[in-house]
Image (cartoon, rainbow, N blue to C red; front, side):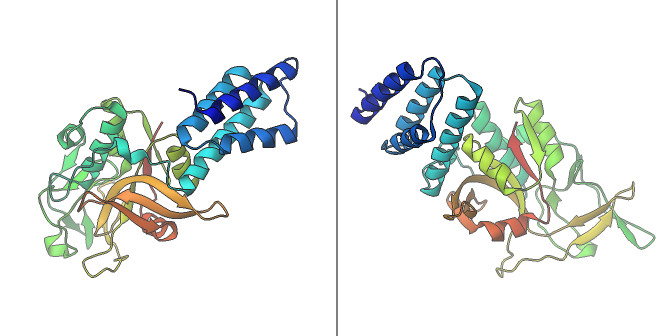
Length: 291
């Protein structure tokens, strides 16, 4: 059954379609009226149906741009009220191994887009690994490169003690390649708020790297430094973590206020101020989004 407001609006569209059938041109006042009429609908689904109806009728480039801008405006309005929430399609699962946050996040990311359960092992089996101890060469610590493979062992615990250095981490590009291999088109981007919002507007979660607080609630910003055999400098931060951003809220000026994301220790959605999360993400500055 068509909502009464929806029916009234579609009648208005029909009238306007007849009036402007030769030019398909809206005046500013008519654009405002359309915008107000769409905003008056009680739910996001009804608003989207109205917009789709408009898009079917008005194909000229200038009107398409206007109508798409309306659609984005509605999406942002819903984000402000925390209604555009992509996580209902994500079946959150705790990571299977002590240090498998990257493949856990990637498995959820893949499961969401492929619409089937993708196990951690499916991702893990497609990423190169290096599980040998770091070496000392000319007073430098030489180890492998998390930009190209997993470094160290998935069942161990993290420590900054150089003589007992352990850990398990991998950065975005090897994960991105593994996702491509199982049929998830994606790209690695820098951690930027506009790209985050753009992904959410399309209904897509965002996988990102950031720095957790330690057990005392503090952020350890002093890295362990080593060099690859090719001489590339690697800065590793203990408590590095990955997860999925599933929505954001906005200040009235349009800037992001809070970021909502899944955390690795429980099944609840966590919330953090964007400025705080952006600072924690700045040590890695990478995220994976659907392409």
